[in-house]
Image 1 (spheres, helix red, strand yellow):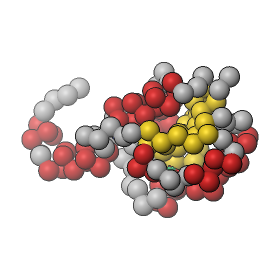
Image 2 (cartoon, rainbow, N blue to C red):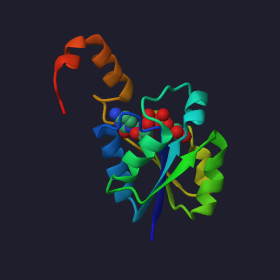
Image 3 (cartoon, protein in one colour):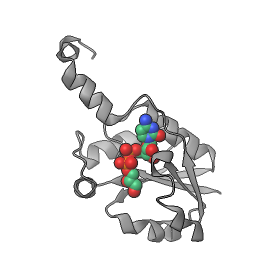
Image 4 (tube, rainbow, N blue to C red):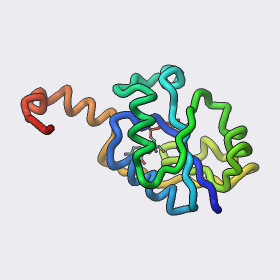
Length: 138
Ligand code: C2G
């Protein structure tokens, strides 16, 4: 059983996140997601639309995800890798090089991002184009 781990905020879940999680899972058999807590997001200077519990519910419902654990600090990765017997650590390539120190404990893989979508772009587009608020999507 090859165990994979990745970390993120996954706010306003979109297909860029799904692409990453799908490819991460394809590298192994079991995918763990370290989901940033609201408090850790403040450290990352990110203000989330959805709370940790709401984001956890969304990420847990993704077929590629086997376990969601809280990410509450930058420093917990080594402990997580040991505790969950992780074989592969995966992040989008916007983090390329930042986690190479984990190579001592497991394989480190950076995957291409989905370039055209991001949570911040969604927020910007929605705030810029008020017409969206008129469209009934539900
Ligand atoms: N991602 C992607 N394509 C996008 C947007 C995001 O591949 N269009 C990837 C990111 O590279 C990351 C993951 O999806 O690997 C989650 O993205 P974020 O929620 O923005 O995570 P981030 O804030 O980068 O947190 O300790 C690591 C941090 O918690 C990472």
